[in-house]
Image 1 (cartoon, rainbow, N blue to C red):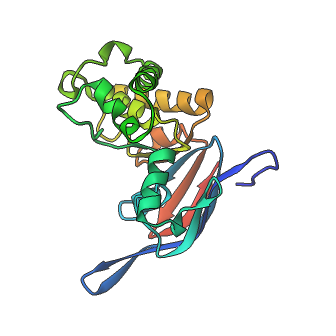
Image 2: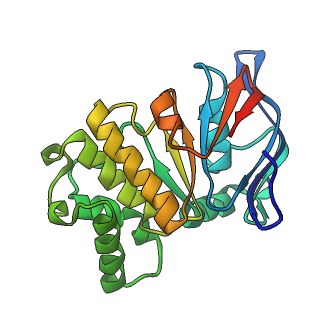
Amino acid sequence: MTISEDQQVLVSVNAVSKIYHRGNQPVTVLEGISFEIVRGEFLALMGPSGSGKSTLLNLIAGIDTVNSGSIVIDGIDIATLDESDLARWRAAHVGFIFQFYNLIPVLTAYENVELPLLLTSLSRHERRAHVETALAVVSLSDRMEHYPSQLSGGQQQRVAIARAIVTDPTILVADEPTGDLDRASAGEILGLMTRLNKEHGKTIIMVTHDPRAADKAHIVRYLEKGLLTDVSP
């Protein structure tokens, strides 16, 4: 992909490698990965199981750290941050959407969405305004007092998306966000993510095995055995 002069690079992945150890045996998961993501992009990462997709997503999200290379997001090289600084950066700049929702069952939809805001200096009144806005964006204002067990899978994922956007993060990272949903619910979630990208300008990085999900992205990048193998416009 050629980046035009009017596009602003938000994420720059530079010669990133990641190695894990299985006993004494090193296992290279990513090897010299480099690419850029412009602000407002919707990027899908595809590839077979074990190709390094989720590892790359976790590195960009600051959940994991690189062995070599750098990841610069909005001018900050997150590979240089220590653990506490990385945790603060992550809380302020990354919204997470998981395959299995990761909602806390004893909390209502409202309380689940409010959780990230408890780490901020916002007042209770300000938190309520943020939560109500996020739930309205995902069309769940009428379900805010419901518990996860009272919601369908698609509704639970919408709560998870509201939780991801409630802090107005710099990037949204989604790991197989439709992987646990039926086709109709998956379509609703992909439609919501598309609106977040188009109408709210959210930069989204999504790992998926589903070609239908990847079709919603602007750019699809393919990983094969830890290497970037292809880019599709």
